[in-house]
Image (cartoon, rainbow, N blue to C red; front, side, top):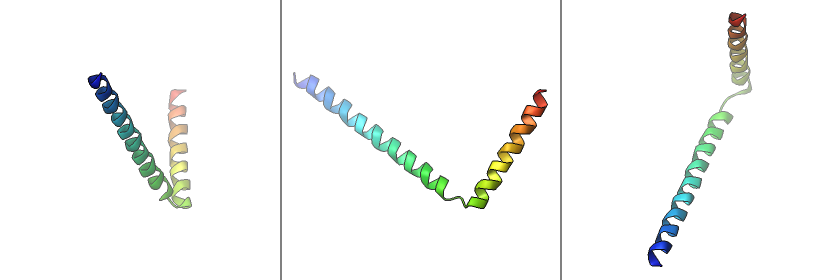
Length: 60
């Protein structure tokens, strides 16, 4: 019975570690996203749009 309890504890701790790690990744990505100025965001969107339309034009 003790071994079974030990496995559940290990599994639970691994799950908690996974949740904490994913939270760190999400927070880091959010900080990176918020670091852009509105002008930088507009410029990036325009670049992505130009790239997408160029790729679509190449297909046809």
